[in-house]
Amino acid sequence: MANILLVANLNCDRVLQLPAALHTGGRFYYQEQGIRLGGGGANTGIGLVWAEHCVQLVSQVGNDDKGDWLLKEAISHGVDCHQVQRHGGMTCEMLLMMAPDGERTILRPMRVPLTLPIMPDWKNIDVLYVNSSAEGLGQWTAEAMIDCLVVTQLAKDNRRRDAHVLITSESDFKGRCQQSPWLFARDIAGMQLQYFIVTDGGLGAKLYTPTGMIQVSARQAKVCDTTGAGDAYAAGLIHGLTKGDNIDTAMQEAAIWSTFSVASQTSIPGVGLKQYLQNEGTLGY
Image (cartoon, rainbow, N blue to C red):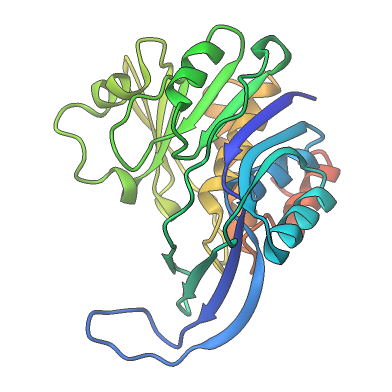
């Protein structure tokens, strides 16, 4: 069991089911599917709790009924939320517009900026995972690198964020790199970067290192809902690395976690992942 600190969002996802994929100039009816727990804090954290890790979340929600509901839901899944802050505004909803093939378009409002709490004692943390735009994270990741494994998602801009492992998706990475992917990643994550991973859905993931690139295949899955697949991938990767797996094996584990995620009509990991972990990862994988 590892002590894992997540700096990530806790979201109230409102799902709108569409009859067809979005396109410019289209006009669509939708079916309201209600709200559900989501965001990287939940999508990543809950799977890690199921894998018997101790998960603390740094995030924030509004000081309202939706914020109360989000905290209650996350805590009920075993996520330690004592560092989740309450801001004075409303908890905003994320609009997930779901196409019939499981792909989604997300509309999100501007967030109240997250102010980080006092920096923890990194000697008590095994893994820091960052999927947030909070100001001051650069200092956190730089300090954490000394004592624990740091895994971060590539920010939407090219801000510096020290990491041992940097992760992004092909859609977020496309068009941003004017040099080799490894040099681009090292400029973002620093000289101690060990691995740069670019996921690409059913096409698998590319692993970049100082010595080159390898491709790790995806797992076959029936896609119901792609929401949270990248978060589940990051969780599976962290789980593998904390077990002592090499990076190739950890990426294979991440692909399994992502497969369970897309096969479930939820934002958080589906019960298939929980059953897989309860059976010590032996359900045909």
